[in-house]
Each structure stands twice: as C-alpha cells, then as structure tokens.
Image (cartoon, rainbow, N blue to C red; front, side):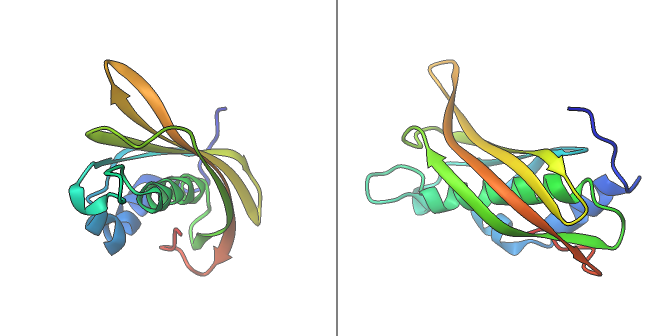
Length: 150
C-alpha cells in the first residue's frame, strides 16, 4: 500500500516524539525504520524483561508493537494532530525466544478520526524469521496534541 504523508516533516515529528517516550528507553527499544505508514522498532532480549519461563514477556512485546502501530498512524497525520491507542487485539504465535526482536507497525487504513493498523513482532531463529506476535490496533486522532503517539 502506497500512502502519502499529510506532513512533509513526519519523520522528524515521529523521531522527536519517540525520543520523549521514556518507557521505550526503559525497554531498550529504538527506531529502525520511519516511513509513511510504516514504523519498525527494535529491541533486545534482556533477563529483566522475561516472564517466569525465561521468554520475553508478552507485555513488553505488546508495548513495543503498540508504539510501532501508533507511530505508523502518526506518520500519516497532518501537523497538530497526535494519536492515541483506543483498541488492540494481540495473538501470541510462538514463545519469545531470541536475541533481537523487531516490531513493525503498518497502517491498513488511515481515516480522519480512526486509523487501523497491523503489527507484528518477529525474531531470528536458526537463520529464519519467526513471527512471535501479531496485533490489530485502532488509533484515534487527537487534535491539538501533535507530539502524542500512544
């Protein structure tokens, strides 16, 4: 899907907002790709982010892919408009075993008020990319809150 951003400075806006998001810094997450309607955030497995079986916690993955979806939606908003998550559904597909995880958010449909996104978290195992988590998310436009994403 080819989309046109409504803000020619969308990349700077997304990167500036992400830099202010302390929770992503706490998780060790960083932006890898910023494109119109598509965001990739990477993060590493760390022992303090695991659940009782040693897998990366679902809450960590959900938080990061939610941000990827939110920033994908923000990348298509006009200046002066932010986004907030209003709904999402997550399916965990495989145990979160790996060293490096990639969360990608993509806009499926961008409307004036609601934007629907799909998100995915993957990792590399034995030379293959493994899908660990899928998300379907709805983002709401928030007027007058330019820096808001999530």
